[in-house]
Image 1 (cartoon, rainbow, N blue to C red):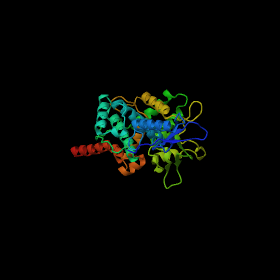
Image 2: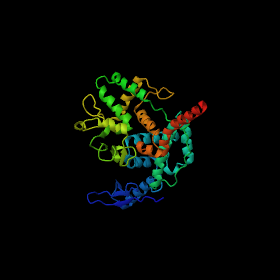
Image 3: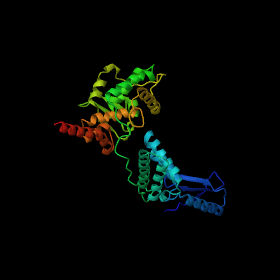
Image 4: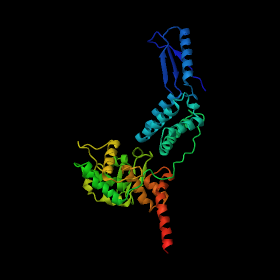
Length: 365
């Protein structure tokens, strides 16, 4: 570890000497008054400050947990999406709750991680929640290791979620129609725009936050029906979860649906959704809550725990519909998944149905 050196300087406009050091993380000077004009007393004050910095681990290669977390949030998380930051913050909070706030970042090893996961499970967290928190925690430590803040990356156990099933099933076209019929009960005054928005989710496969900003002409997500050989979505890096610029093929039924809009009306949002005051909805959580209420009013249940259809179930249904027609690599591109493993989940149910069909045909034959 490189020990921080506290230096002394005299400012022309001050009688007292000034103590300072350069923060190795930010590169900025940190100063404080020596509270004396005597050089010898200032040197003793500098020595005391150096001892304090040593105690909290402010040197390079030895970082306190609090320092790491502040630095991680101010740098890495500042450039990530809100949903990522919410989950990452929850993961770090859960880590602190499980094992207490660690003193040193470098003191976190495989034993600490194992205790953390055991504590999460003892607290009643589901396998999915444990896997999600562990994945984000590991990403934070990988970043620290790459930045040279952590000498060794702690070992994480392989976490297997029971089976490979999605947390809720896709819905059928008939169930989707039930959802649309339930809209007026929840939004009697502006049900037409909510029906259109839900159709937009159904046909496009966009995530909820993406559908809210999809536009005919403006970034970050732009509908393009004519420029390429086929209709597509032009997505800027700040418009999607993967944080990369991308041109994504548009599903044919989505393109046909959007093409019905007269050209003179192709301005503003592609799936306009306005509040009762006439301003665009911007809060994803509010829209998600309203769609969840519509799903509950429809009575469409998507898992054994009685969960009703939500906005993300429409994207899940989109992926499942196209999984029957596309190869995994093509579906991965359409869904914009980072990992092919995520894409392959859409094939689990379909494969079982195809095999069952062959078995029943063979039995009848």
